[in-house]
Image 1 (tube, rainbow, N blue to C red):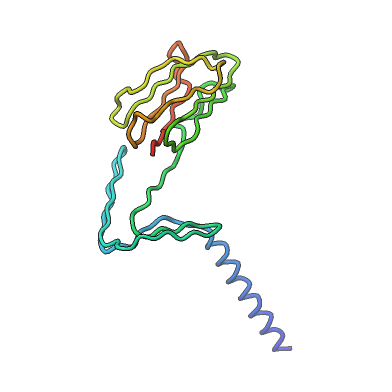
Image 2 (cartoon, helix red, strand yellow; image 1 turned 30 degrees about the horizontal axis):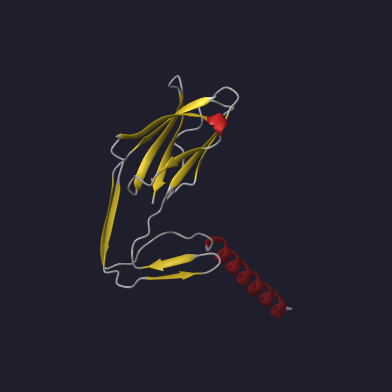
Length: 169
């Protein structure tokens, strides 16, 4: 009887340990192991450096990609705010992009839009009017360098519809 009681306690303990390992083992965070390094951030810019990363290799499985060597950037892709017009369906894809970005707009009220693209310094690099009945608007990014951009979409009267952070790789 005492043996069964102890065995049940051991099985329960092992089960709780396995469950705990499974639960907390699902998060993958980005970090670098290096001899030295520093990170500095402001509201608009983040800079980091490392020293002592000598090996470069990428290992892949079905659930994780592990890269050793150079720092890997982490991008969060979001629009800046919720759409100001409730019955507006506005999509920007793909993001991050390499060559082109498409803007898709569906609305009963809005028939055309102003497309403005700003570089990271705030300089206007693209300013065009687009009639969305023609289909998705195609923005050619081949003439722009790899960086972050702000895409501002407004109606023809100037009312802001949406703002996006675009990453050009």
